[in-house]
Each structure stands twice: as structure tokens, then as C-alpha cells.
Length: 324
Image (cartoon, rainbow, N blue to C red; front, top):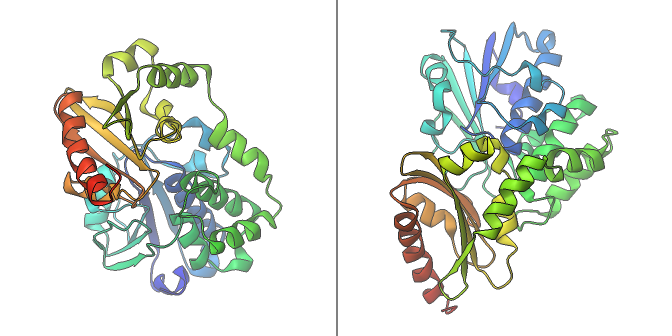
């Protein structure tokens, strides 16, 4: 795929969706593409563009168009084209899968190495920092407005950890520079969407850090939060963003793990690697996916069951690498 425009011939109705529990890159890419298509509907011959995402953090409300994203999947609308963004497999589309199944044509745009090419057209760029970076290359650059640039910039910021993760390449910085040239307030976008935390979020973060545990001779740090603890604080899943990144910077660790309970003895697992441990390989083994140094999955059992299963694979890799 050279440009997204080339895939729109004869298309009147488009639906855009991303993965469950949408993060910054997911929200940013969906919002950016939505704005681009809406602003060019007449030129592209479009009649309707909709976006469906699960509820996301209030920090992304700063993006123009985020208030137009649909969170209810009750309508039985049929679309000419379904565009999946930042989603590695069809099951990760959640309730939006019904629009995927009835669409005349489907497109999958992503950057996850674990993507299984589930659509009619698959544009997966595994060396890109983010789906927002991929989207930038698919849009007519001269038609990228300040509002579109803001959404793309936020997505890149979140998936690169403010340009500090190793997925940040020269191309990433060049694209970020072009987005800044659109007049965006990049400093405020970073502060408001990435760093700013509510008092509640800081309380939950502090609790997780205080109760974190080192295992495998200090090579792995993990923290877990139960539904009971979430209910105690009145916290939502979106209030847990950033905890894994804070765990990751623990000195001397190779891998950080964060678990949160989504159902009885069911945990969403996030993993981050500081060295050469391939956490994507481990996540894929347990039915998840992601990147070499940032991946996740869903696992069942007690916290100890989950950690024991994960550290078995982590230890094996550390031994192969000669770290243990």
C-alpha cells in the first residue's frame, strides 16, 4: 500500500476500529485517520466514516475528534470498508468484530511483529515505532492538518515512551519533526497525555510500587493489582497506564511484569524488557503478542501461577543469553 487513498475506490461507508483496551497509539491512529477521511470526504467520494473503540483514558480527550468516537456497538451498521488499526489479531478487535465480519473489504494497518495478517489487505510495518508512524506514511503529507498532527504525535509519544524506547529510529524523529512543523504544542501534548496523573492514579501507582517483588535474583520485578484493590480505590483499568513503565526502570532488572485482574483468576499481563529478552515470544506462547521488548497477554490462575509460568520462560532466555 502506497497511500490509503488508493484503497478507497468505490467506497462510500468506512468504519475504523482498534484493539481492546485502547492505548495512546491506538487512539491516536484511529483519531488521525478519522480526521483525515472526514476532512477529505467530498474529494474521496465518501458518505460516512465512523470509529468504534472501547472507553479510553480521559487524557486523550485533548485530541480533536476523540469526542466523536463511538463506544457502543449496538447498531447493526454495514460498511463497505473496515480499517483495523494497531491490532495484531482479529480477536483483539473485541465487539467491533461484527463490523469486520460484515464489511465488503477489510484492511489491517499495524506495526506489531506478532500480527497475523487477518484482513483482505495487510499493511504491517514491523520496524515502525507505532501505528501512528505507519499512518503518517499513508496520508497525503500536505493534507495533514494541525489536528491530525496532534493525534499522530500523541500516538508516537506513547508507543516510544517519549522517544526513549529502542523502537525510536531516525525516521521516527524525522516524522515527529514534520508533525511539530504543523504548529502543535508538543510539550503540552506530552505532559497532558503521558505524564499527567490524577491523585487516584498516583495512589494506585504508589501501591503497586510499594508491593512490587523482585524474583530470579533481582532480574525480574513484578507487581499485581486485584479487582478487590481496584474496587477499593474506585479505579478503572485506564488508571493503570504507566505502571509497567515505572516498574521497567528498576535498576538491575531485565524484565518488568505488571498484572491486573480482569475477572476472577484472569489477569491481563504486560511485560517490558530492558535487555535482550524477547517478551513477544513469551506473550505469543500464552496467546498474546506485541514487540520484542514490549508485549502482553491474558492468563488464568493465581498471581503465583501466572508469575511462575512467565518466569520459567524468562529464566530460560536469561540462561541462553548468559545473564544467569
